[in-house]
Image 1: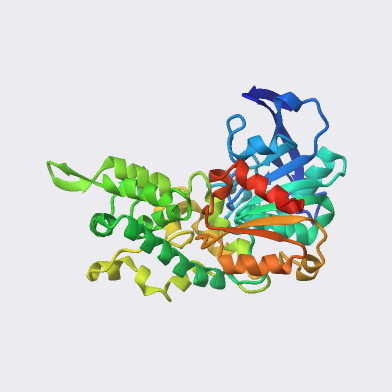
Image 2: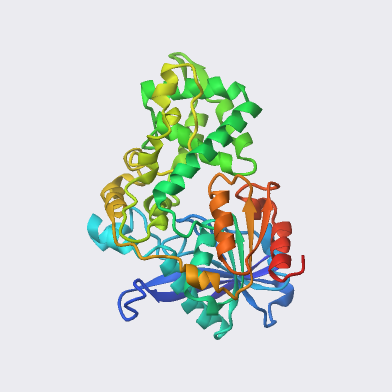
Length: 431
């Protein structure tokens, strides 16, 4: 272990060895990393632990500087473990560079089948035993981290003192098709709200999509396409995302000796926004997190999009309607245009066809839950269906909800201490 300081906080790097396959504890081992954070003024005290599970899948825990955002509030009473879930950050990263060590696509897909919430929770339980001496801890789960927390309640509630969930109550039984069938209308509402706020962006988006359809430029090996451009709609699910999208679009074109072209500034910003180089597991496992039982996910977002023809850019450009942005959807073409994903195309196909996903949630155990749980549910959340979240909340005994339109899906970041305070009050019945 190594420790170091930032303003107001002492940080310690912690590394843990866990089984790749928890059903074979004596088999292959992988390393999982967590960054311990404790208030500098309380570093020598015995404090209860809080483990933070980041959204995703595929993102390492946020890299805080000092006591910013919600971390400062948490450090008043907790020793915090910012966990890089397996395959992310410093936890045996899985990407186009490392996965070939496993072998070919079939071996890679088999390996990645162990990187869902069921394995993440088993990792947490081993880590908890080593850190707390067996005492239960508090879990804070953001987005996919909330999915992991519900799995935790289903599989190992004895490890939990209390659970805080922000924008992350999953449906207990929806297939990926159901998830995306509910998602596209939500995305369309967010796009309509964006165009109502910035009506000048309607023509800008049409012009950009038309230019990309005709020229198909590349930026650092990433092919920029109308479909890729549409995926910038993922920004619309965050509190400031509509404004960020507007600013990105406003400087899309420049005049050159060869005529009007897409600016380098825009092309680089678009490439950065849509690239999966920093989080390839998001693309590889995004639909797999919904897999339960024998039914394959089979590129659900791509198939279901066919039920919503208004999202087809080519059709929009032939007429005079707006080009609709998409959101948190993964498509086969992502693995053709993105150099970070291109070598993993066959691996992704095998995961999409997989028909033996373990069931993740236990409705009977959740109905008998005794762990205090509080969840922030964001009204019209673009990423996680509000109706599904409320159904799941009702299915977990004792869970208390805070339904709000004050924040978007990133409320735990935007609201910081206030969001965490509210959930702690709810979970402790102090509200």
